[in-house]
Length: 474
Image (tube, rainbow, N blue to C red; front, side, top):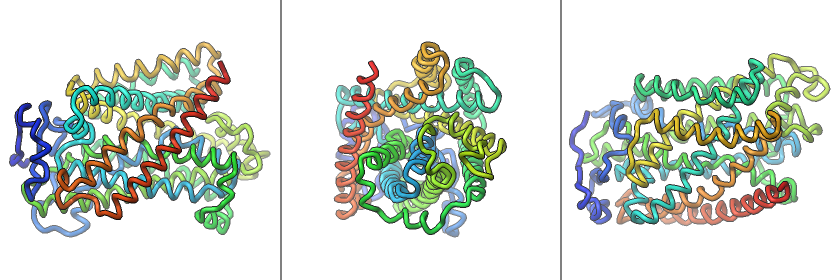
């Protein structure tokens, strides 16, 4: 393991802004509470000498898989499949644009972590101060918990579909994933990456198989990648906004800026820093391409099997039942398709559990410099998250429709947290004072700010819409 890391005292950390970017090699600036995810920081060996492209790519691959999980979590499923069921292949272009935006933001996130040695939460704390950081921490924690609610609901429904476990019991069982996390913390970060990658592969194979059986209209599917004015229709625009909002996840920006630092390279060697940025970008784009494929498959599945039957297919159970109903899904409908759908849902929920826990630790340590054991962090977060889910399940008699409504409303916090995460990320990575020669090119910075403004406006619109619907129910 490399030991040439520059540590600073809490006093020196206050002057870190002047230090970052003042060295050609951008040495690590260590915050008062230590390195990001210190127990796994710089624990994965990478080639130190001249190595082949493929050897480098293999060594740096992994963090992108954990990031990609957030782009195919249970919260994405309803919007993507529902978009296909209601509007056919029309919204394929929205999935494409969302994925390209995600690639840009995750590239910036990885670059920030590699060049400065700070994750996004630490960098934000360094440049905003304690009071502002505390407020931002609260907002980010709410977003992490909102994501956790989606995992709880997806996992509980998958357990019900696969094993007939009542929703209320299934919600309680999701607390046991703390034990899974405890086990994973002892197997090494490289194996965690392998487990997550394997689960992603399971999800992708399930939907590839189901889409092949669905026999989609390939010309219409390809035509859907071309943006159309029809998207501006009221219903289409609402669904498009839902897809964008469910795709670009704020917690991934914190996660990626931290876990890219698990690679052990010499931060005093500018060539190794440049190499790390290059291959972290390759890893991220490859894995996010896989997430793009999964989201396309979800929308294509909805369009090929359910177009014309879009009404009523707005819950996981209704989709599960539809896959086995020949009157809806056609002659290819079978119990096997339904079961595979539930298996993929369970795999998606477990994947999101792993990344959600890591993100929670990153934002707590980065924003307020508070360290607690990972199992305790996970237990507290999960218990808090299941309270509204249990309350909803009990009040509405275990009806899945109520849980799906809760899942939608939990996205309100994600709408708030996204600009809070994007604005500092684009600001930091566009600053030559902070990033040195690794600062964003002018064209990229302009494009990024356009995206920030557009996504902020879209998320405000979603926020107003969700709050309006919630008030209408009260």
